[in-house]
Amino acid sequence: MNDMKTLHKEYRVDKTRIGFIKFIFEAYEGVAVITTLHPETGHVRMAIAPDQAEDAFRIIADLKKDFAFHAV
Image 1 (spheres, helix red, strand yellow):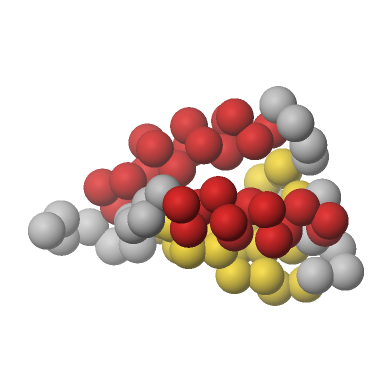
Image 2: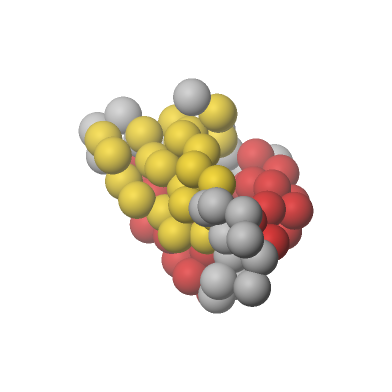
């Protein structure tokens, strides 16, 4: 296993899509865990596995094509 620490990133997303985003990342088991910080504003935190960062950012890039997904 990689010695690097989990990468934490925060995003503001379309609040109606939080459940969908969580579902997508659950489907990609081991890539990232999504925690909702403020559901009313769509503020979420991602805990990204260090050896999965490339995949996580590729998934985020795909999601950005369909709705708001902005780094905080």
